[in-house]
Amino acid sequence: MKIQSKYLNGDVIQWLADDAVSLFFLLKSIPALKENNVQKDSKVIVNSISLHSLNKKAYDYFDAPGIGIMWFFSSFVESGCNVSDNIVYSILKEILKFQQDDGGFTLNWKPFCSTACITGQLVYYLLESGYQGKEVEKGIEWILSHQRDDGGWLYCPIGSVGDSLKYLLFKRTGKGLGLVHTDAPSCAVATVMCAKALMKIDTRNCNDSFQRAIAYMFRNDAIFTEAGCRCRVAYNHELLGYPFYLDYDSIDAIQFSLFLDDTAEAFRIRLFNQCIKKQFDDGSFPLEHRRRGCMHQFLRLPVKLKTKDKLTTARVVSMLVNTGNAVIE
Image: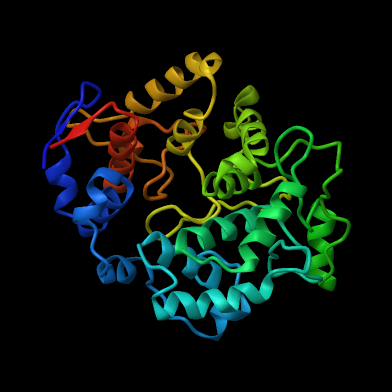
């Protein structure tokens, strides 16, 4: 394979092809290559991501990145597995136990209550896995009914330092952040996760909600003005492998920007140029924040702290191809 693009300084396809994980994600994310190249057997990918074994801790701390079953489920699905795989289906059935009566999903906080970021995350991966049970419809209904007037989402059982202390000391989460919590803007993490879930379904039935979410994310660069959640819980984990758990970056933002109208063209171009300018002389792109595969606009690290990252490069190449700015032969 060869890549041709006026936006790349060099052809990085062979460099990516030498790494099984990078090549897999490259093939998986480019529809033109998917039919003929992506194999059902993704054991190499699963083994590279799942460095911990499923045990009692994975179920006791089901929401914890790196060790919980929510993280495992997301990693397996992102690695190409689906509901036809026994391990994915068995974890899926356990995760569905944490869906609340209102259709939302909860974190490992007592008392259990629906949380916007986790609901969006899990509905997205339920859809991505091919699961078509009634739980997906309930989750979508929760997302649609909890969108705020500003277009985003803010719904979490932890709303302050005081709430955090109540949880740590008494296992109670306090008042939290509700749907009508008007003195705080929506949460970028929750909004991105819910928007991704809506993007996976037939948007004719929820196009207005999806467009309002996109508009919120790009209003005053809201998607980049915070690096954590409004609930004061910092999802700043050094994840193992490709970013998939409560994460977003400037490459995601470019994909979302494609759904904006022509009035956002100037912003889309600026975002695109900021991404392209970060590449090295050979056409590869940097690792930022030690989070493999991420390109965070709000992290402006000195060049000397950046190293080449194959997963970031694979994501940029896929974005270029899928937006018509590159061709792979």
